[in-house]
Image 1 (tube, one colour):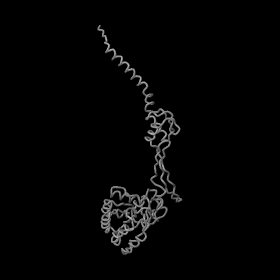
Image 2 (cartoon, rainbow, N blue to C red):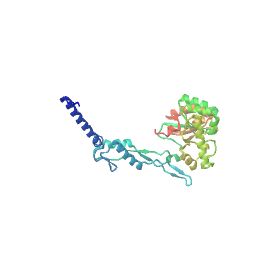
Image 3 (tube, one colour):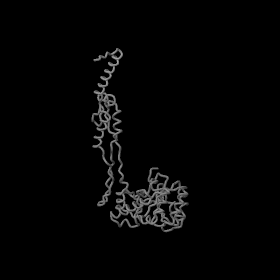
Length: 327
């Protein structure tokens, strides 16, 4: 049997090792308590009256998530009640920003009484969707060129050349039966950066349609345009023949579409002389206005002068979206 004797240096190292192990063991045993003092929420902090002092960040997150589940509310869209014509107002939703709330709590001074960090969730459809749009922002130096297309395809290529030369983007409202016949022209419109919108699957009379037929008129055309250009067209609906009543606007609104009318009608479908068309539009147009046009020979001839005339009045022609934006 061999007996080992430790030297003074070895004994000292052994003692240090034992002390270290005891210290580490003590830390391990008291880790949670130490962590609460070092990184835990300061004493006396509360969240909407619930004490959270001393909690660790992961524990705070669980508390916040639990309270948020009772507080969060989905937004509610405005809707049109067909039987009475009543518009049921929208309701803004709300959601707790858990990460921001946890950070607020963990950095708060002792004794703080805090509220949750809340974000509003806007509804997709507001009461404004149930009002026809005749005019955009009157404080805007812009006007919209809204071109309804159900015929006149022979003039579209020249329109596109003029708009490219003048650096103008417009909104084309397309009829589905026309889209089916001239998909390449539709793709050229989209490729040039113009806004494509809905003029109905066919050029029928909306004021003679029931709710389901109106829905089909809009949805089928949107699906068709999307299949041609590979993306969803803007959610604007220009009723064929300009027919508009509360049922038409309400049905479009329930689907998330704004009903677009006009502030200045060029009446170019009657083929007026280009000078007559120019005078008719330029004498009436105001900031934020929407100019209704069609693909016709007189309009094609008048377009360059119309664009110049608008700019001379300090108005920049563009899309419907551009005039609906804040100035």
